[in-house]
Length: 237
Ligand SMILES: [Zn+2]
Image (cartoon, rainbow, N blue to C red; front, side, top):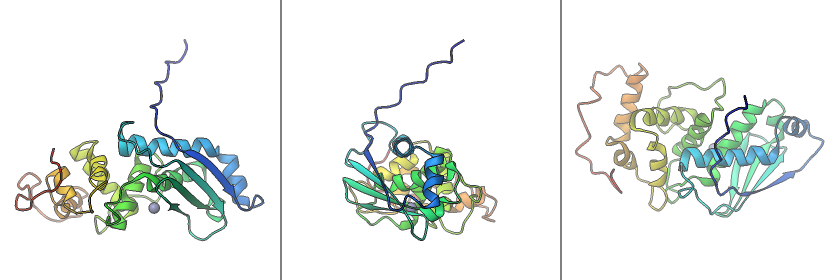
């Protein structure tokens, strides 16, 4: 029997991809090219961002025309730079040397989130920016072995904030992180977006999350309050 037909992929506004390799003889370049196909991996990363952060094609930003992937010798892992229409993702060959294909994919999903996410007119805390990027990586299925839930602050960033955002998603619905992102599109970042989306202040949400993990030690009930003293901003749902 033939396999069932795969559903058509949504018509995402995928960017043009270009590739710059500074030193073809670097061992990291061989590892990269042996493990992944550059155009496929970048388009898959963009599609993951659209799927998890924007959900539908009409919400997906169309401003980014081109993403250039730059593979070069540098310290660190990767970073993203550029203008509203043209982005550059720099990825360290030195780091790639010890990477398997899933780590390469995971890093690129994280960086491509930075190409497309909203940032509350540059006022969003870095921890939330990095947390949203790792939340998409988590949802796309590229979780490195060292990640685990926990942490000391909701805006600690990276996987700490990502797992917190995933708990919010399980509690308040799949639209939670897309709505938080959307509220940072045209307005200055304000912590009350969490209250707008969930009905609770982010400090309370973090406390509930820590209790859920068995790390809170508190006894407050998750159904006894709604932070009614603080007004929310933006649209309410
Ligand atoms: Zn990042």
